[in-house]
Length: 547
Image (cartoon, rainbow, N blue to C red; front, side, top):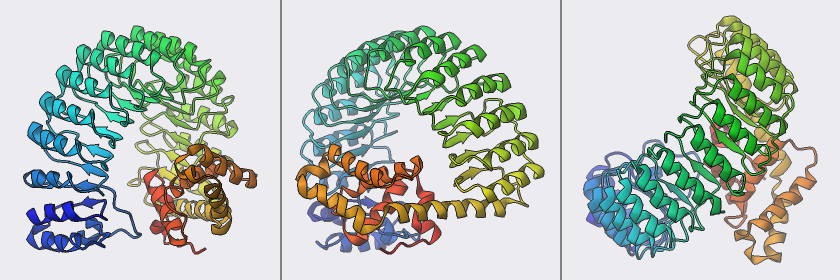
């Protein structure tokens, strides 16, 4: 292991080391031989794992699960200049956090650190905070489940007041309480770099939420905040709502697993009716009844920005579904709807069928665990024959039997857009293969359409190269990137919204490297995987595109 640490200290090309499992002496020797080669571009998992990737993947992180070797490896980071990401699924404790902090004070390349569940405590947090005050490269930091407490929150807050690089911060499950919330709120009110923050499972309570709400009124950079499981009630929801009437940056808010009742939803809906920035809202597992669903439905009829709603675990029943269905017939922005474990039943499924035959924007819907039987499945199958927007349809943990599976299998023969569907296949032995073949066929259709429509190498790259030549900062400037995407969108007048979304995702990844022939297709594959579209990646279906 000393040899491995030395190799990392002198290697200047490798940016990822991921070692899962026990390599043993021979494996480490082999790895050391490769790492000491200055031209090495090795991904340790590719070389040493029995299961190799099916397409090239650039190295971007270091992951080492042996706590005994951790201390030797971290010292190498003080001189290594290529590692960009650290994942430590081990227990390093306060001592390990102190050593890592020492390296981070001089390291200028690491941008992502995962220290979740490492028992660093408030002492380790203090050491890391001292490093964050001077570090200029870390953009993503995960300190979840580290028992930081209010003392840890205080030291982190002092660092966040001066740090200008961290954009994503995960602090869930740290027992901050009211005092910790007050400390972090003081940092949030002045920090200008954090865009995503997770404070879930921290027992913030009413006072803690109130101080955070006040801080968010003056913060204009946070776009996503997770406040699950923090004992937020209707009064607290009202305080957050007053924030949302003035805040223009928050686009994603997670209020799941709290104590928000229908009165809180009414206040929330009233504020969001005129809000044009919130796009994702999670109200899952809150005690909301039909009156609250009625207020939410009113919101969906008139709000023009919300694209994703999660109501998982709220027992709205058929009555609530009927209310929602009326809104879905009018709504023109919602794309993802989670109704899992909401007691939809067959009658609710029938109500949704009518709405989804009219709605033209929903692309993903989750109806898992809803006591839907053959009657509801047959109704939904009839919708699939005419709906050309849904690509993800989740129906697992229901009571569907042979007749329902038969109807779904038959509908998928006509449907050309569903690419992901979950069913209880132990009950689906007769139609499982037919359904899977239809899904694979649809995936092939989509992938081929994407390549044929968008990925004509010469045309797309020509547009990108023009902008790069005109503006050298194009690669780092998202405004120029947006213009390029708009150019291509203008050319592709007949493309679906789903296809255009894929285009944006892939163009975003393409501009991070020079658009070279083979690399072009590698980046497409990587982007599809990174953005959870792995089912479309060519290596899963043997589709290899040649320009």
